[in-house]
Length: 631
Image (spheres, rainbow, N blue to C red):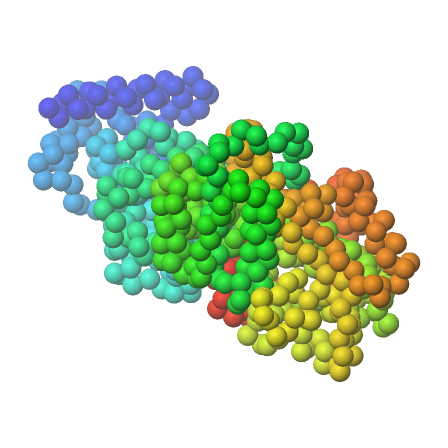
């Protein structure tokens, strides 16, 4: 039996060698001693005896062993050779009792090169083993700033925390992403129990992911694991059975494909025109639309604006549509339960109105592919659901113009809440609007969700009279006048302008598009779809006080019409940033992706983006999902 196994292994090795020769490549194992001739080794580190992932074992240390094996460690020596007889005896031993003696190897840039134990590696790899025990010496080169060096430096740091050498990400940032996914900080040393639990979970995931050919794509097991953990919580997944993992992983086919293609988000920047009425809606069977909020209209201005939008949607369709609404889904468990409750009512569409509900929306959509779910968030690359948002930065630009015209001392305040996608664009658009009409204008940035206190009070103490504050109020709020752009002299307050979210317009147009058959047309391929509409769609509006000077009112009206017609973008200029960079968008327009993911501030902004530790817990939770900067 072992002789026949050797013949099959030899045949495979010779085939691989022929193919590599035909491609103009070496048919043999790479040799580390030759690689090191051109490497600048900074230090050596003895790791002791560890489990070595066999898929990372790619070569030999000594060049003299190269002709013995093909790439992949298949044997190349004739069956009658002494080498072959030793391989066959080792194969018999493996089948009877297993291979237990550790090999000796060097690790260089995440790959392993065998010093002693080549035939053990060859036999184990032939039988599909995942790892081999080995005594390892790590050769660490001098590292620079290249992507490859940054990636290896990230691996070394990750290994020192976790002792895990079987995860290998192509992007340096993925190691930090894995730590976040398992709820570990970037400084916590893992315990032996934590390593054991993760290894057991990883092994189950590995086998399930590889058991179906449908998942054979450019996505490695480790990258697929990140996709999975981006949706399913690690702590609740680590104890799942293999059948449970198989069910969940099989549902992620489109998510894996989208990630492997590195597909960008298909942004739909304006709604289609509608030329027909919905005479074909079946009588007595109104459309059913579900809504889920993470808070309530009485406690959240954000939910209040969406509730107004829900009521506007009902009014737009009269008796042809009914809405089902649940709120207070402020934990993952409540969100999951609430979505299941809504789905049991068999709605046609479900809108989840906060980025906090993103993961719950994804899980529900994966479990119920017959239900179409949309989440209110930005820069979310998940083809399983669709997302929607409004281009608030257009209105903020106009508010900045107003503030720049009215400020008596060139000092303007701006209160922001969360440093998430879209928020930075709002700040910069406001700053650019003020600068366009007043080159000396300075925007003093405060934050409302930091542990240091209310940014509004800080701006008032600095004597800043014109302040841009929150965009809406909760029902029954006692601070109802602290909205939009207002002027405060310490004793009185007068509102000047307000940007308005008109979610009802967006909901109505998405529903009409769905009824007109546009849902499929909006997804021409497997990319994620996001509706990101602005003033031209009526989703964002600007309300100005009657006390606004007539000249300023006329200027704002002209600029608003230009934005709606597409002849003006708030960012179509030369922009200088706080950190000394310059972006020239006069000759080529800024892209939507660049606007969404801005992580810089214009040079006339005084202040900075807060770090995660500066934020209150509620804000930290949201920033972990939608933060404009990695945390």
